[in-house]
Image (cartoon, rainbow, N blue to C red; front, side, top):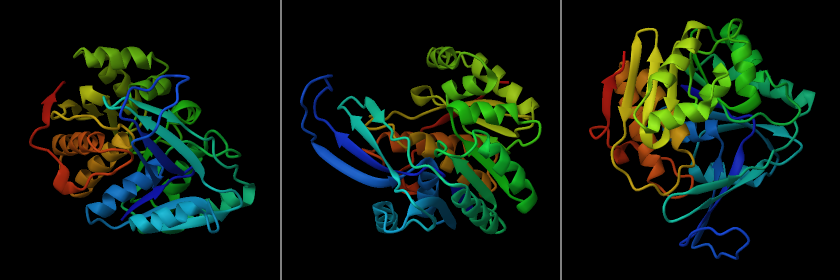
Length: 321
């Protein structure tokens, strides 16, 4: 089973424009959609569409409309009841694929709600082959919560592989605690890799766009040396880089008309984990990861691709070192 924890899920509302966004102007959306979102939820959604057993764990208020959206998507889920409702994240997409996001900070979790969420996570972890903890942290929890949870899961589910996908202060806290609590896999983008290694993430992304992946590889190897087995770095249109103790590879995505980048990184992570769970090697897993992310970018709003929409053959993987 692939177990996911999304401690700060969201109702993702997407406003699709048929014109370029102009600040201060009045626009009428051509289409409005809303789905149950959040990084871990999106990974579970992809796993469900691929026919894999999965459970999406998250906090939500009783009778929260988020629960209705989860049910409509048929995503296998378990909610831990909290007092406040799930946040709403708003995305505006333009015809050229430009995506603008405004994220709600989300509810605050009490100490009792945090303990309940941890208890549910540890209870479900016993059956999991992969555990994915992803997204921002809700208000009220310590900034190093992912490190604390990683350490707890190492004891509660010693045979499970643990993946973390986060950013900003939680990512920096994860980096500060790698010596004591390193997950098996992380999936940063270039900016987040910079946050993790105290380097210029924007410079890493710009160099990758120009075909120079050396900085990304160097930064990722710093993380690998500190105990993370696999570092999957998603780089948008430049593809992705995978660094492990065995080597470094890059994948170039197939052509796609970008409609929305929301959920593309989550889809990339899901594609990689699905491949690794199936026993595929690093190069095949990287190819599937990029195929998933590319397929997601070609879909409007926050839509998660199914396996039949992938173009794995159009994804090129090459050894960097």
